[in-house]
Image (tube, rainbow, N blue to C red):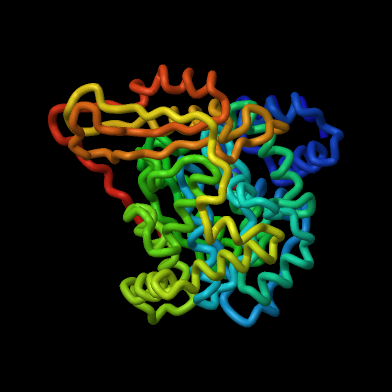
Length: 434
Ligand code: URA
């Protein structure tokens, strides 16, 4: 195999064979192809796309590059939920314990922040001591016994994706339907699940910004899942503003805890329950959507879902005490609030810019080795459509880096638009793809 010829073929928009994809990807994974050639192929795929067969080949090669889990001994339905990424999206942290209480087994493998979008692993690690690098056998045992375990992609699960994902993050090749599809689905199939619901974000804080692009991604993901015999559905949900009010790792953990204590923002709870209902109805097709939502809200009302989150935390080495007493958590040294300079309706939020502002104040990474400041984050006081008076609070930004905070606040007004007429409020759940 001559890497140059494969890059050249894809750059002309021609279809690669399974063996060309397999040889190239496996040689990159074992180090015999350098980053610069893989980057060139990724950019050619990004620009020229891939056919359905090529995407399936890429998924298969990435899946088979590592270990695949077997949960056939689990005494119940084994399922997972995955989001394509956005700002303030903390649904997994609520949904994993809720579904575990309802007897669904959730072997959840999550990611870190990617580009402007946050990652579940970083949020979980904001809990002191929380270990997302469990040994795979310990994790499997936890999933069987506790119905849930929350880990990151270890070296053994889709190592090809792990290496390629890191390269895509720094070569602006994330926003590609075949690359996202193969990356997400190889990891999900490796989990050994029977059911999967995908939260495909759409809007200015998502990788796919228009409903048409998001629909194409959702269709691609769902068809790969089904091809592997996994019951798969997708909801296309809005990302034209952050989900909930909190952005940033510990801020989002706090909001998740409040959600599990019955005090979560309406949009966050609606998306959580809608995604959860998909999985509950895969496990029991006789259940109505309303009944599936009711079952989930009961686990919040009776405290069992919150107890489950504390149990997960304890078993994964974290301190459940901070979840019981949120005020214990160290606060950022500096904070500033942006207020409305005129009265009117909040009509637009530049969600992606808020995600990047989060990186600037220390809530995300500029490069892979950066440490995250878990106390940095933001809190939105307004949502699109709110009628604001002059001087009303829009967002408060918290950081331990005073200079970065000043820089973000100096651009603050660019992130929001206020209009005199009420805007169209984007629907929260746009579509269901089956
Ligand atoms: N999440 C993934 O796991 N991979 C992508 O490519 C994008 C989001």
